[in-house]
Picture 1 (cartoon, rainbow, N blue to C red):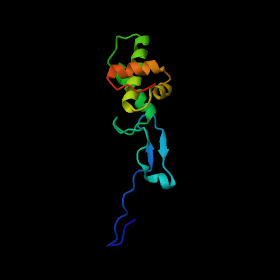
Picture 2 (picture 1 turned 30 degrees about the vertical axis):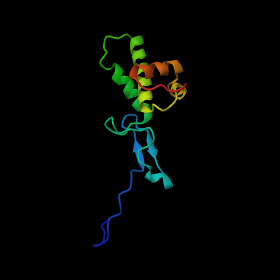
Picture 3 (picture 1 turned 180 degrees about the vertical axis):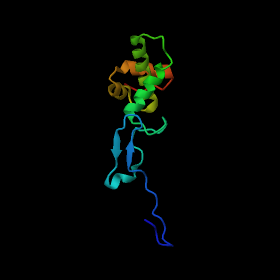
Picture 4 (picture 1 turned 45 degrees about the horizontal axis):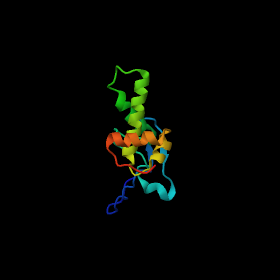
Length: 124
């Protein structure tokens, strides 16, 4: 639709819907929430919007993609370490218990991940 001369174009609005570039899950903001922007825990750093589940998977895959000589068990362990380190880096202020619950592991494993990456300790 063309505007009459002298009428300004409407201001561009933030995107109201998002689709993960990897798993194709969609988020749509409605009503007064339309101007919220990128959904919480999503990122654009991986070549398109990525939901948290895909960001976790990408972090785990990145850890093992160059490791062709590992056994299945070693790859699983490396993926687990990478996932924990991703979660600690993503939100280092969360408690070890919260992170452990999010990735279904122990508080001790989260503390070990913090130690490996040099992140400050947080009470369990």
